[in-house]
Amino acid sequence: MTHLPPIDAARLPAGVRARHVDNGNGLRMHVLEAGFEEPDRPCILLLHGFPELAFSWRRILLPLAAAGYRVVAPDQRGYGRTSGWDGDYDGDVDSFRFLNLVRDALGLVAALGYRHVDAVIGHDFGSPVAGCCALIRPDVFRSVVMMSAPFAGPADLPLAGDAAQPGGQAEAVDLHAALAALDPPRKHYQWYYSTREADADMRNCPQGLQAFLRAYFHVKSADWPFNRPRPLHDWSAAELARMPTYYIMNLDEDMAQTVAPQMPTAAQIDACDWMSDTELAVYAEAFARNGFQGGLQWYRCATGGRNSRDLELFAGRRIEVPAGFIAGAADWGTFQRPGDLERMRDIMCTDYRGTRIVAGAGHWVQQERPREVCASLLAFLDTGRLD
Image (tube, rainbow, N blue to C red; front, side):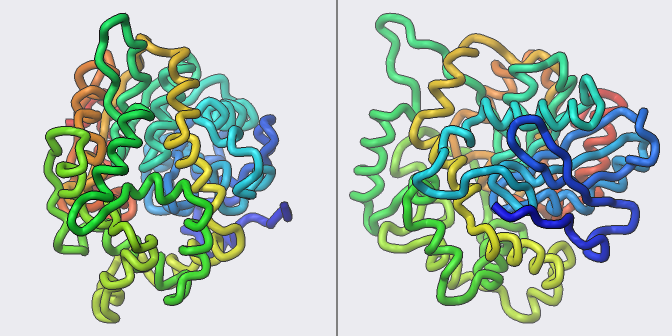
């Protein structure tokens, strides 16, 4: 893999720098950071999701640094200008397991010269990684905020006579058959993302990569008026099919085809103050260069059971550091796995400090409503409360 230079400073807010850091786990990590002028500041680590980059935190870095923190956001394994990962579908999938992603974060913290960070904050797929960091190394990751994807933690080991855990492998097979039997037939996006075809479907889509990303970001945001999320009752085909097709897809469509009809108009794009065409180009260039497979390997570790098997080692353990959850009011991600929000809040986190639902935001909450997110994060860091 080619070693790329850091992102051009002209594409970043003044006061944010980009550089590379060897994390000691095989990665040359590309990081954005603010508050670096004073190396003794307490540190905060920000972990992005899919299909995102460290750049996704561009509106969060400086406000947190202004409060006295050194704030660091890496391109995670499989993304952006970080190198040292295997992006081949037939390559080293195991390196994208949660335990190794925690090792990536741990190595980065040490490489920055810290023995611990005051908080690890994760969005989307970065949320369960942040949760695993706090679960596995609470001495290093002293608090955690999960965003847009609740982290229910490891399933409890079944005792003799227990029913199967929701979402297990056998149940997943039955779910796919049930989804395909619906009218119209459907499929779950995470299992689609685990197919060999998904990368090329998006990377080489007919509308072009930047248009695909524009539609994808739009349809999962509060700008798309049909995002009206609500809790689902159970992990069944009928309930999951209540979600939009970017979650429970039409069986015969790929993701580029799914979002294409929702492409915003030119006027809507001009009015989008949280994602300009210049900012969107940063994502388009990154995924045109690398493809999506690095990020899609994370889904393969989830759907193939690699993560759940690893997390069995921690069955029965809880996140004991202060924890909270932030999501947009128009984000279906909060409810995509029925019961996860409640399990995270009531069982998994023994020191839960609140849930913050941000009005006017969808899935990309820290990009759509950065002021509100920053205010909540600073309240959490200062008073220990999100709500």
